[in-house]
Length: 433
Image (cartoon, rainbow, N blue to C red):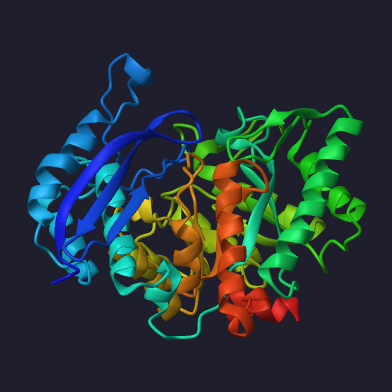
């Protein structure tokens, strides 16, 4: 069969932080090949797949020679002869071969690179772009971008407590228009930071790294940047926040906001975020509480999660079981989907499907440590996820993905459909009307 795996090879390449990562090639009997690289996160949930790193002094312990060897020896031997058309069976074989819950033996980085490379090879064997291979003839939507303007938290030396200050343009009519609006806001934010002497550089995901005295000052600056660009906050452009509250938790479980000089219990942390929602044109909030604070996540949903999007990242870790658990607790209305967080394509798709079953929204997301791999632009489109989060509007590993969306939109031609306002769960959509 032309879609039978004949060869698998991996190598060490470099991610956007200059750290080693794993890239894998999968070759098929018919001559088609697929290639994929594993991203890596800085803000990581405790329950996600675990990358295999070499440790020691070389590369600060971040080497991946063991993970590369796992692909070239054990994984290659096990998958040779399998059909890439059976992604579920292939991913199950990878999970069984590893034998650990978090894929720590072979490495989540090794497993996800191979899983994604096999998916790419399957599309190539069909002579289709990846998004079309995933869509399988269904009409799918181009995703609404969620794009970082200011970076903070673990991505910017914790200069702000909130990790990502982002914007969304649900009223845009296309990916092209959404990106053009973003470009203007991004440029305006940079000018504002320069004019006020608050620009400190660039964060890990390419956003401006500003010197703010408080989290509220960052929100005020973002509103001002939207207005400077000629758009209406809360009408043309909305704010989206990744609080990444898990990074703010101390050993006693309380949340410490350095810029505010205060710490909070779970209820007070929810109240602080709810105050921001009341005062600013915020449409989406990610991780307002920590990864094990399901009760706090449910409280946040009751407090402000009815007409805004409330996303679970560290608390859900791209797990279908965790999505169902959270939904049963009345916690959240959207899941962040990170393939490397789940470890395989199949597990990631299962989490997205679980969200759909609950009437939730889904956002396919990159990581802070990325490569030029553009697969997630195709995943977000082909899976009809509705939303995508890549980072900022700068740096080639980010722009490669935004530009790939433009190419996909162009390839769809008159059939192109942009998710826009339809990207959200029903209650959020009602709030936008």
